[in-house]
Length: 323
Image: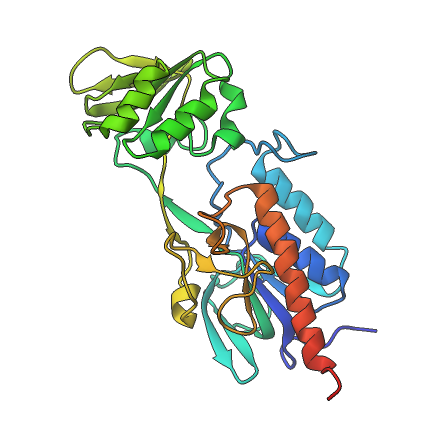
C-alpha cells in the first residue's frame, strides 16, 4: 500500500535535527510505521570533532560516518522521509503543527511541501557552544581542545593536559583527568581562583598558571600556549567549558518551559510543556538532571524515549480510553 501524499495529509511527526537524537527518533517512529519527516539542516554540534568516543561499537568513528550509516538504515523504512532542509519556525495549526522551511532552492532533498504539516513535533536541534575568547582556541576545538573528558580524555593518556577556566568545573575536570594525564595545568587566563578551589588544586599537585593567555597555536604534540608574561607551555590537549544556548529558535517561538541551564524542560519521556511537542538530545533535560547530558549515546537514548512517548500520544488520540 502506498503512503499518503504528504502534500495533502499531515505527517504523524516531524523530527527536526539530524544528529543522534533525531536519527534515533526517526528510526523508532519508522519501525512503528509512523509517517515521519526528518529535517536535517546539516549543522551539528560535534561537527568539529574528528572522532566520536565512548560509544559502544562506534568508539573512534568519525561523526559523519555515523550519520551516513544511520541515514542508510532509515532509507529501508518506507514511511520515513529525510530532507536536507532547515526549519525556520514551528507554528501550532489546529490539532497539529506546520513547520516552515528555509532550504535553498535546488538543495538535495528539497522536494516536498515548504510548510509540511504534522500531528506532532520532536525537537532534536541541540545546543550551540560559545567558547572562551582566547585567540587560537576555536580552530583547535574538537581536536586538541574539547569539553568532555569522558569523550576525549583517554586519547590524551600520558600527556600534559591543560584545563582552561576559573570556575568550579576546573577541579572536577582536573580530578577526572588525574589518572589519565601525566601532568595537569589549570590556565585561569588572568582570573583569580576562589581560595577553596586553589587549595584543592594545590593539594592535588595541579599547577596553576594565572597569567592571561596570549594565544594558542597548534603544534606537533598538541598546542603551544603563550602567555602575556612567563614561559610558554606545550600541552597535548586542553579542556574548556563553553557557554551553551539553544541552537534553534523553536523553544522560544513555542513558549516552552526552560530550565536554569537554558535547556528545554522535559519529563522522563521527553514531553515538553506543550502537548504534541517533544524534545530530545542535549537541548533538553529533566529537572532532576543538573545539566544536559552531552553524549552520542545519551542523545540517541533520549531520542528513542521521546519517539516512543510521541507514538503513545498519537495512539491515545486515535484510540481514546473507554468512558
